[in-house]
Length: 381
Image 1 (cartoon, rainbow, N blue to C red):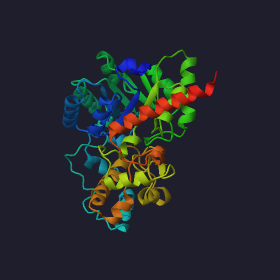
Image 2: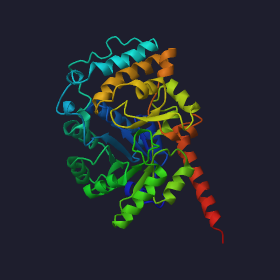
Image 3: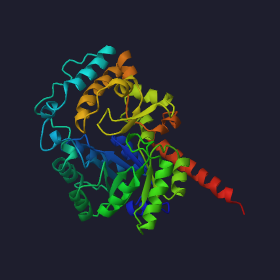
Image 4: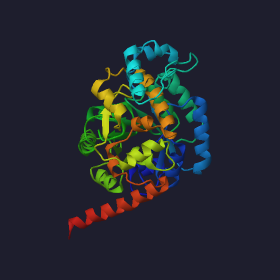
């Protein structure tokens, strides 16, 4: 076990945290000595139960965690127990017409794309107290070792439920002032994510944000450990972040090119060929800034699309279209292949080969050790 506060807190060997929507990635990282964290915002309670039961059977008692998104602000129309059909009424036709026009331009049929069933849950349920409580009740029936919340201070009930069960709670932050609010609220671990990160992110770089937060915590006398995030895909970067004060790293993008990941094959190939400049930070997918792989779809929204809607309304515009794009791209549809995109950080420029999740962890360890030896050797006698 490495001498890191998060290793001691969570009983892991190596302070590498893997955020993934894919249970296979989660299990593989935990078994390799790191900590897999399952992204659960899109899962119903029934599906979450299935996923966690599978992970339990797979990891052999190794620690793993769960990540939810309970933002501090969502659209008023999404509050309460609403269906997707209810939320459809709050979406301007201009947004749906724009999405349809882009699909048509690439010969993709959009018929019935936005005919949401009245029985389908609204996109904001899991982001509110009722939905999050249901997810947590399922999660705490399993031996999870960490709960993480993105997009704001975890609601008090989440913190209380975690602390009652002795489960540490982590929170993602993209600014120093957010980190201080999280510490005041009682979180146990801060995931400090720079603007290079895939998915939701702020605009301050990891290289600046990590030491800024670490120094602020030291000044206030806090011992809350920091996990660095944002563009980190190698062990050298991990060593650099820990030299700046981080206790470990939180990575999401690096797993997307592994064979186990949920990534659409067309997108995986794009990522393997991409440079660090082939991403865009945009509100067009969720209504909040998130970094994703550039494609004609993202370019169109940035150049000529209507102003993105608040979360979760924008997702109800983007996700059905992107799901159809992914499905068609897997059948070789040229237009869909061109439009295909997914969340990924600027570290994609370093993700040049598809190797297994376990191999990624081992490569992290080897490169981390080599970087530490280089740094030690630079000090001299």
